[in-house]
Length: 295
Length: 304
Image 1 (tube, each protein chain N blue to C red):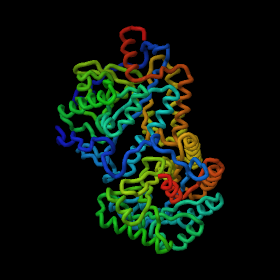
Image 2 (image 1 turned 135 degrees about the vertical axis):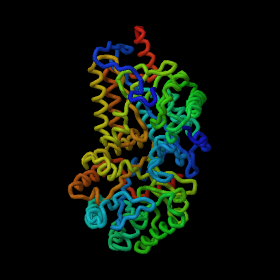
Image 3 (image 1 turned 90 degrees about the vertical axis):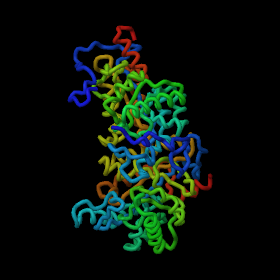
Image 4 (image 1 turned 180 degrees about the vertical axis):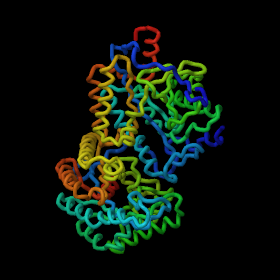
């Protein structure tokens, strides 16, 4: 990015109007991917000078135990519903989960889910890191996920959405090919980086379960209706968009929410216009379409 | 700009947790729980019965629901008292009508100030668990351990004096504990707490204390006050949760549905009809076992 400039120069302007449609594989109109955040929050993390981790003195019992629910209960409830309706996950992973709770990571891997990095812990922020420190967490992420799953990560969602001006250049240099940190489009777009070939993969804060429940204060059924409307609108528009459903199993995997969410997956799977897939597959299909290849 | 090198060191990056308070266990890997009479969903109602001094304390933090305006905050002081005088008695009547027994997380100050309330709870067969001294009795690791020990002791003593026996359970204000709390509770003779919402069935700390997960996400405070949803939506969410858990229980063993209630929130006239209907709807479902915290504790322990 252009550090210090008003326009960080992340990408070129390209309005929605006038774009060529993209037919996703099978002639589908909307690529739908589900992104479970599999996270580990530390109970007593060191302080980052730029952002506080917990609201309360440690231990923040509610904050910590709420997230812990994901790794004891919520993950399986969410994952079973996804598998039942044919939705793979593309995991935003706190890579230290590979050490703390390898069973969770192994379960996701066995379901043929894709992994990308969401930092080491969701309680360690990138703010204030120098280049060597930022390289260290990228290298740690690549190594840790490869050792635990055999997969080579292709994407990045900054830990707790904390960035530095050099993050995108660095992940592109390491060969990662998509970022989930930019929210300017409903389709993948090229990102300007010093080297490499990076695209923005539409993720979403607006229909993220965290926003749904704690920013917009939706009931479980209102959130489910929101996801269905998001899908219906995109499916009615020109072909080639992407819908991401970002989840946290300590939220969506609660017993009062999972039933309404299952109806969303049932609805999208039955519609016929959705290409239900993973982030890396969307990146490949989008790149092929840019080259004029049949996808 | 760079961060202190220790920020990229992870001394507790290891198998299991980054603490030793309790061990990791994934629900699907555990021996299934069987509740009495083949019931699937232990439906545990916990009512918080609280006294808020009109002189709030911010040490270590101000309790949720506490005074908000400049002194004297008549509106919040009296609205909380409304809960104890009126809302709580509506709830007691509703429980009697539905034939359910509950646990009441009670400030020690309630016993000292309103001992007749304690007797009304006990006479109806409900359980009393300790809930600090009064709503200035918050706990966090910034509170000196000796002060925390005294607070736990005073809370239990005030309740025991009126109850004639000691409470078995504990609920911290705002579920907030220090690193020392589980040990201090065991030292004080407490058998279970309901502060950690990381699970959906009971589990045991390393020191033997049991945790009954009282899910804050399902509380009236969270849904009605924080998220500002309607009482009808609240009731629908509780039934949705119940029905999901009942289906899971049929396959995977007993589950818990915790209903955490606050008299000054759920006990308002315009909410009570919907709440009474919810109780009746839950009662009518064949999987429901209405259980006090101590009943769930005993059943859980008998299976460990």
